[in-house]
Length: 297
Image (cartoon, rainbow, N blue to C red; front, side, top):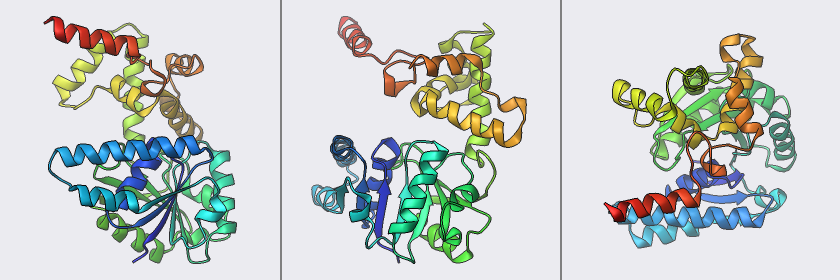
């Protein structure tokens, strides 16, 4: 089984993917252009491992082994020399992904599989930036990666059966449930989820109900663990916008056109949890306010 993993990008998805592989016994080289991002990722992974320990599902020794399986790099060339699998988890931007895949193709060993964690962009289009399209595949993990069981395994037009079989079995070894998906905009998860989120924004935009009211209806009426507007904040409103734009361009169908409120919020820098404000306020002042209310009860 392939054991040497490289993860490109140390953001929310990248550090979660690195954590998951490392905890499953794989050696992981985590790559990011900024050392501060790598330091933040290791801190996040350590915190998440401590939470697992607190629940009684991990030992201190296993935590140390997991962290010992991860090395960090700011130079992709140094990181990929012995890679069996590279998982790209950079921003959901086509031009950026094409540049990264072209670079990975040039630097990685001949037999290395190149995977992308894209949530909507065509695997076939990404593979075309390489000379090994048969070894390019989609591995769409869900956030938070260490907890969520699903992995969408997306075949591009040229993805070989061998590549698919290796990644499918590897996903099982991570304790995940892999699901085979064909290469269409949004795949399955986001093709269904994003129109729902967009419709929730449309409902707010039209003044049908407020943010909390919309989320409450979906939580209590449809048994969703999180309302669609809160979920959008958690995903990142910029990510939601990028996915909707990919589907709108791919299908040329107005039902995928992002709502103007979403467009304006992203332009204004209101991206959800990551920016401190989206449909909800996540600022430090609001956190302090919530804590004070708890003590006043």
